[in-house]
Length: 364
Image 1 (cartoon, rainbow, N blue to C red):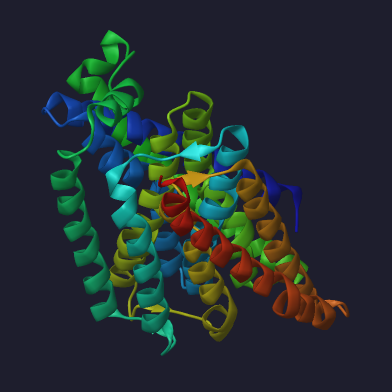
Image 2: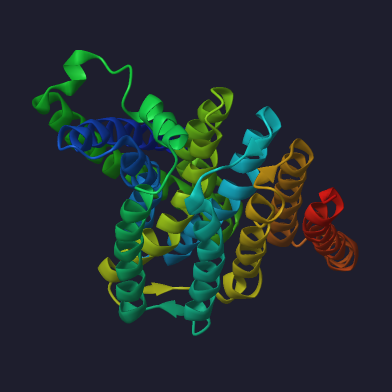
């Protein structure tokens, strides 16, 4: 591996983030021009825009024959979104979420995660699977637009401040918006090509599988827009945006990105057995970890955010040990299965039980 490969990897990540930013800004202002509300823009245009790096990389990987990177990127991004993006956002400020859609979206993420795993059991996300997933994102977008009309004025105002206010006058010009969108798409395509080629070269140089590269370096890199959006929203106190961005992007990853990548890749996306056995179940478990958002007072406390971050460190450590076939792997796996996972399940059960007893205890 040469320094040139590392340089192109970094440049690819930079172009992906810059392209996503230009695409989001241009598309959001263009949508506002046609009278679309800021809340709908946030739930659809921005969620899709922040997921555009994953789309570019997964499509490019599928067309290049690196399906392991394509699927690993989708799975790894969803794991990163919840454990790191939500975790860091909760550390900044405990996330108290009022958004009505979260009550529907979180169970939907869990259900779609399970569906994706079932589709992958035969080792492939085929053409029919891609059509079904793509139809799912269309149906979800229509549902989100209709449900957004029921949101409270406070939530409407929050999204208006984030996606409609404070823009410079020159951004409101139609030619500028078109240039932003076109430039964003061009940067995404170029960045995805550089990132995928560099990631494959690094995997070959270190003898690491393309799956691990997709689950880690590529997934983290393509999730940077979600991380930036949610952290800034949390710092501003816009907690609905911080959480809604993560949940919306996770759904887009599974439905739109996996669906489109499966449709454009000849023969569909091959799914490695290792992903089916371990990483996809982890993704489902991580989706289940979102339950406290709507089951324990619509709140993610700081300690829960720290727990999320700790779990991501544990997950990445496992990937490294497995990739290097380290002698500590059996003991590490046994500790996870025998102690950490049962403790997590017990914690969730206690949280749910405590939440259910609170109204009774508070009653006179």
